[in-house]
Length: 303
Picture 1 (cartoon, rainbow, N blue to C red):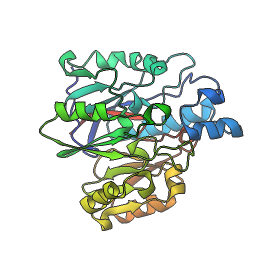
Picture 2 (picture 1 turned 90 degrees about the vertical axis):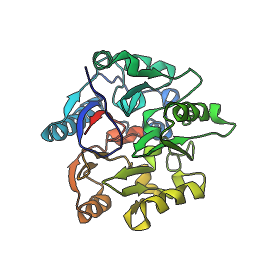
Picture 3 (picture 1 turned 180 degrees about the vertical axis):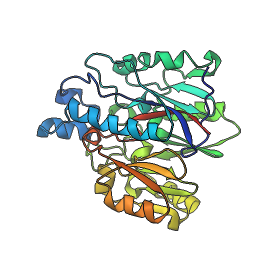
Picture 4 (picture 1 turned 60 degrees about the vertical axis):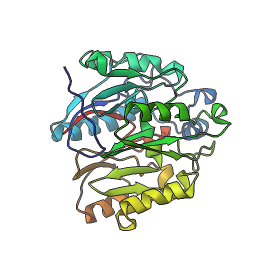
């Protein structure tokens, strides 16, 4: 059996599900796009091709294995995009949550059945159908659980609105010993304005640092709370262009080691100045689908 354990975003990683780009299917039609950035690349003829994305994910797997991480991959489904494993499930403490995702992605969840079969069934949670939540919005952090959400009345009209108030309330009820802190995210059909998930505009790193983008948050006080919590000197503030390129969506193998995109020069320089080991890999093609390194991983066990 797998003894799940996720208390935060940066403790030493022991086991993870990494998505796959194999057999991800043809370029979607514009009306099939899940997010504005993918749509932009579909219309421009620059949508990523499978061979390039496989190379990027192989590079990621190589780095994970270099640090002795047990890497699980989904069963490959024909013509199905299975890159973003964070969307379909997530772990808090020793509970495995099935994300209530867009219905046509149900197959992706079934494709990680081999992993789920190794988890105590009593620890596998499925929230009620009306509780919408995806792993990119959920961040356990010590005594907190940070959750990105969108609670405006037009929620149902936004395909980019992924986690709702009902789900936040369920998580609060399930973890009464933790403080669940929700953040209202900016949702837009403009890819340079849209925070698809919380990890598109924020991520804790190391022991006490964070990457943050102010405009990803609808309510300035909520953004300011994070700045005050981590301390201004510990925050790397990214620009709207950097948010668009997914600078906040790096991935921590430990408190000292971060996997980052090789073109993130300003961020990678800052991380090294702060004492991090930065493992740079190519991931620019995958980023065209408004997801990056954190989105591609679903951690199961950290120390």
